[in-house]
Length: 319
Image 1 (cartoon, rainbow, N blue to C red):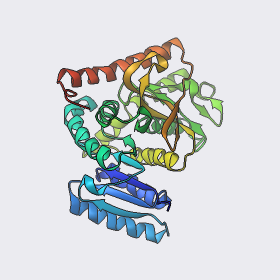
Image 2: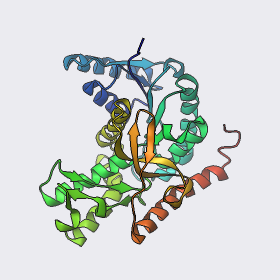
Image 3: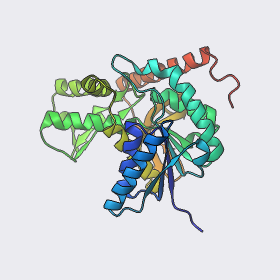
Image 4: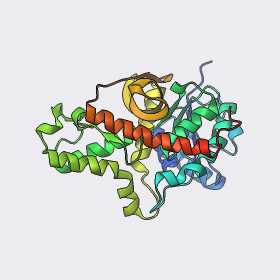
């Protein structure tokens, strides 16, 4: 008997619960399983979302796993658990705290949903994706970081704000790590197929690039009580849908590189084809010398985080 699709979400805070809500409204899968240390709050959110799904006549149900042992046989597991990014806190500050959280969660995923595709959302994103891959022992195609979809959406929103038109027709492209060294690519960004350089000045494009790099911090400063969650959640839901529906669509995602773009043993955001088997193909786009230098700097930044993990002997005794 063919079973319905199951999506596990570890961390039912703002991002995790919004991902669950988005998937439930879309009817993307049969069951969405929330896991959070605050079990009663998770139960309340699950009940609320199940009723919302009933209102729109979605077949999705939302349940709660009281332990990782209850999160069995998931097709996709999304991990948002960890300390949030607070005002004045860089993504790097979260490194050791969230690496330990990720290790604990991944041990449960590997044990109870060993065939799942993992989508990492916890920050610092690229380093946590690296930790999840190392700790799980999964193939690199099955451990994917959510970053590029979000960063590209932010860039597209800033382009629309600057232009005052083109909503829904803007395709922005961002590569590299999910941090201040990310690599927005105006050369690969268009409005209804029209190159960005034909509708904006060099100065305007540069302003958008810089704002994209600081997009998350801008929201943190405005909220003052946490970080963004609507856009990160929707970006994650888009990735989950692409996997569950086996769309073979290309999305920018953080993956482990094995020689692509000239880099090894590091995680960075690149265009990948998402399908039922995860990141099924890495697309290597042609970068000019300036873009290559920016991508190298971004990879170096992520490598610095990995070096810190190694210096703290984090992986000693790991699988």
